[in-house]
Amino acid sequence: MKLEEFKSFRGRMNEKILKEGTLEVKRFFNLDSEVYKDGALPAKVKELLGLVASLVLRCNDCVLYHLIQCHKEKVSDEEMWEAWSVALIVGGSIVIPHLRVAVDMWEKIKEEEIPA
Image (tube, rainbow, N blue to C red):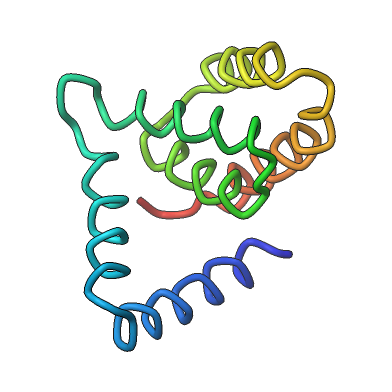
């Protein structure tokens, strides 16, 4: 899926879900947004944590979302490669296909310079 397709689909579906979903769904979505804000850990670190978890759990949609957020948080290539190394060590070789997707998408995100 291309970046713009992903962003458009995610936006449309989130809007529908938040409009029609139950209170519990809305609360979960809100909690998901709140947990990544600055706190004892900066938002940048939390997004990298989310990215590592997404790679280990093998969710490419989540990987792409966290890559976009990492770009907004100004994660450097060096920081990204260290996070990817952690994901690979924690998740093992099953992470490799998702790492390929992440590396490809990271390059595309940087090329497009998605605004924060």
